[in-house]
Amino acid sequence: MKYIIDRFEGSYAVCEDEYGNMKHLDRDKLPSSAVEGDVIVLYLNSYHIDENETSKRKKNIQSLADELWSE
Image 1 (tube, rainbow, N blue to C red):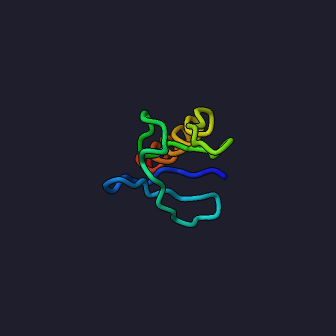
Image 2: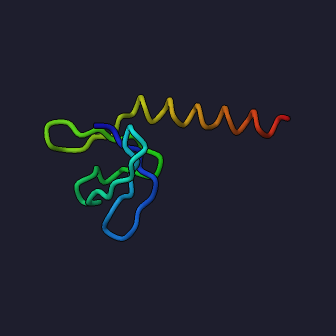
């Protein structure tokens, strides 16, 4: 299962899953380097940052923002 970290609230990370559902994950179960916007995956009972998906997502968002401001 993949999640995107939307924000942190106290000891939880509020994440969106692949289907648009929001879920609270224990912050201490995520990698310590995880930040808002990271794509994380559950693999072998632990969460890992998917660097490739995170990078693609950030580039796509930047491209959309650039398009918006160039008009």
